[in-house]
Length: 217
Image (cartoon, rainbow, N blue to C red; front, side, top):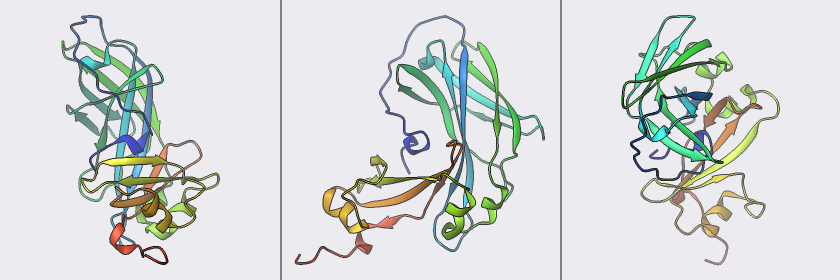
């Protein structure tokens, strides 16, 4: 998947470099535990997405480091993604993973934001998710998220670029309706979020070739 947008449903805009020299400032932190299902038989691949809302110029973001206070484990990302949303600036990373088959630790974390001049800012956040998801197959994932689960649909073109991410349109009664409405759609997948949007489950991809044509075509 080329775009990290489904994790937050942000509207991505291109930002340009700045020569600002103000110190970095973290105003807020958003963390999402992501469970990605490749098929219906396998357990999900888990990763953590962490984004910081910067009070200073986010375009100068150099790296983000997170540390689990419970275990002492730490991760550092230098390939920082940059977004703007509702006049807010965000910088983060969507692919923090644990080695082997270990899950991302739950509990409190510290995040360190470093800009291109080596200036640091620090904040904290927490990670919580149903532990059972790590050993839950895709058919049971929605139930494992608890009550008030929200559904989204992600649609991709032939180049695997995200072209739609939102609730299913009212006229999309079946998956076939998606293909007929979006000519450039090549494949899609359902996504389920828990009540506070801190856990996101990506269901296996559905390819266009698996969808029957409309009657009469």
